Each structure stands twice: as structure tokens, then as C-alpha cells.
Length: 116
Image 1 (cartoon, one colour):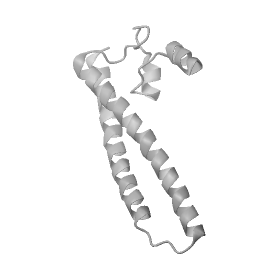
Image 2 (tube, one colour; image 1 turned 60 degrees about the vertical axis):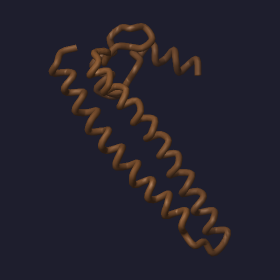
Image 3 (cartoon, one colour; image 1 turned 135 degrees about the horizontal axis):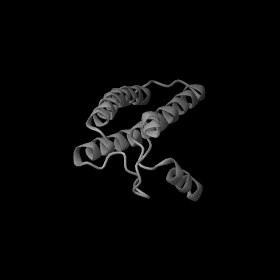
Image 4 (tube, helix red, strand yellow; image 1 turned 90 degrees about the vertical axis):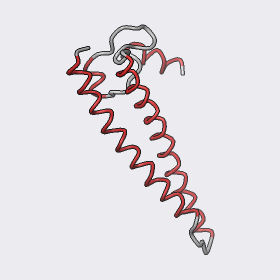
């Protein structure tokens, strides 16, 4: 991969990383606020539990994506970015544009998804 392409993806990944870190901070604040609410009845408890579950799911998904982004940024530094972890072929440019932290090419991703 050319240096200009690596810089392009590095900028995208760093921007998304900052966005996720901001989101995670906001979700943490919201979860803390939900846990500190003075709840009056079962309806309030149900509403807070529902909101808490949604916020927790978002937090988990964003945390996983952040880990994948950090791994991709490390690969850029170490020289392994854009290479499929399964077949070791190059991951297509268009795939990386859609998911810059992809670790599998399209074919291998389908194999992994089918096996899960």
C-alpha cells in the first residue's frame, strides 16, 4: 500500500477513534446519571433498566470497535495494515474505505461469519 493511502486511512481511523472516545465518555456519564436517579415506581425502574441496557449495548459495541481501530493503527505503524489475517492477501481498497479497521478480506470475512 502506498504511503498516501496509509495516511488516508490513518486520518480516518484517528478521527473515528476520537469520535468513539467522546461517545464512550458520554455513555459513561449517562449510565452514571441513570444509576443515580431517584426512582418512584416500577414504571420508572423499567424505563431506567431499558435505557441502561441500550446504553450498555452501545458501550460494548463502541468499545469493541475502538479496540479494532487501535489494532489497525498499530498495523499502520508496524507495516501490516491492509493484509487479511486469514489468507494474508491484500484487503481491497474499497473494503477498507467502508471499514478501515477490517482484518479480513471479503472472502475470509464470509467464511468467519458462516462459521460463527
